[in-house]
Image 1 (cartoon, one colour):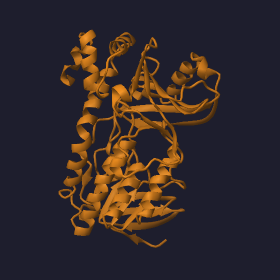
Image 2 (cartoon, one colour):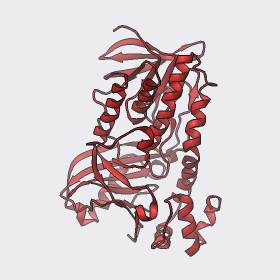
Image 3 (cartoon, helix red, strand yellow):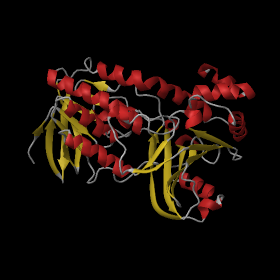
Image 4 (cartoon, one colour):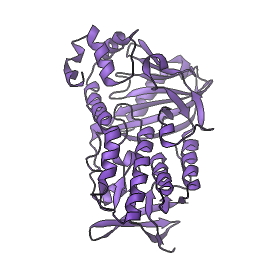
Length: 395
C-alpha cells in the first residue's frame, strides 16, 4: 500500500466527520476521510431521533432517511403522569425519527460530492508526530499498513476516541459520565407515530426509557442507564425487559433488531485541539449530557471545524494557537448549554421517583416558550419551590 498525503485527514465517517470533511473541501482543501468499517452508518448505535431546526444551518436537506416527522414528545413520570411537549409550547424541540444508516450515508455522499476522497476498511493505528506536532496517522487497509500525512488531522472517531488519546488530549471518562444503552427495534407494537415517548425515574437509573416510532406498529424501544448506578453494562437489558413486560402495548411485540453500546454524558472536553489536530463530535464530548443526543452538535461543530481546518492547512498554520478559532467557534455555539445540561444531569440523577412525579405534575398545563432546563425549573418553582432549592444556580 502506498503512503498518502492530503491537506486535511478526517478519521471517522460519522455525521461529525462527514460534515467536517465536506466543509473543509468546500473551503478549498484536499480532504481524505477514512472509516474503519466496511459500510458507513452501520452498525447503527443510535436511538434515531433528532431535532430538525439546525439542519438548514449546516446545509442538510431532509431526504429519504426520514421515517417520521413527529408532532412532539411525551414525558412520563414514574407514576406515568404524562407531559406533552409540542411545537406550540416547546419551539423547535420536536423533529424526526430517522434511518440513521441512511442519514450517515447521505452526509458522506454530500462530502464526496464536495470533493472528499473516502476510504473504507481503513483504520488508524497510531498518530504520526514530528517535532511534537501531529502530522497524520499510521493506518491499515485490508490488513496492509501505510502512512497518511496531513498538516491537519481531525479525530471524529467517537467518544472512545483513540486518535485523541494517542495525541495526548484529555479524553478519559468516569463511570458517572457514561450511560449503558440498549435498544430493540420492535414490530407489532401499539406506538403513536405522532410522539416520541420518554419514561423517567427508577425504571432507568440515571437515564430514561425511550420510544421512537418508525412507522405504524414499528418502533425503537430503548434505554440508557448510568454506569455508576448499575453492576455492569448487561444490566441495562434487565431494566429494559422489565419495563417492556409491564407495558402490554410493547410486551406483545416482536424484536427484529438489537443495538447497544456506551454513550458519553460528560461535560464538554477541556481541550479539543493541539498542534496539527482537532477533535470533533462525540470525540470532543459534544453529546448533550442530559439527552444523550449528539448528531446536531457534531454537525454544527463539524462545519466550524472543517472551515478552520482548511484555512489552517492552506495557510500552513496548523498550530494549537490557530485552532483557537475552532475552540472559540464551537464553544461559543455549544459549550454553555452542554455544561449547564451536565450540571442538571448531575442533579437529576439524585432525584427520587416522588420528586420526578412532582416535576411532571408542576409542568402540566404550563406553556413553555422554549424547552430548556431554565424554563422547566422556573415552572416547577411556582408549584414546588422546595424541589428547586438545589437548582438555584439554574434560575
